[in-house]
Image (cartoon, rainbow, N blue to C red; front, side):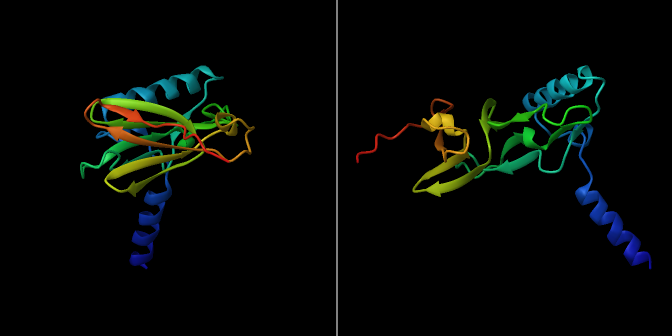
Length: 159
């Protein structure tokens, strides 16, 4: 019976919302994003802010074999506003490589390897591809460590 109690506590710990205080290792640049979101929630009818499961990802964004940080506002919640952090265009994700934070409105993202590059793929609003929201549209970006910026381009397709 004691085993069941330990097992239940383990699973509750896995699914419980995570507060910013529970992430002391979160870099300062991302803690500032969380604090801004918390303040926005508090100012909206005295809401209570939650940082839910999936808000923080660790992934190698630049190919240096070190885990970088991603903060996903899709996992921000405010008790008094269902859509305070996201809209039809998606939610902001904040990608931290080294000391540089770059933010992008998206509906989902993934990192894939393409030759020597780690490529950040993001599902973005269809208006970025000349359409409307349901129009499929994806961006591909790669980190340029020499200039500390994300590089991407819109390809010119021939018919």
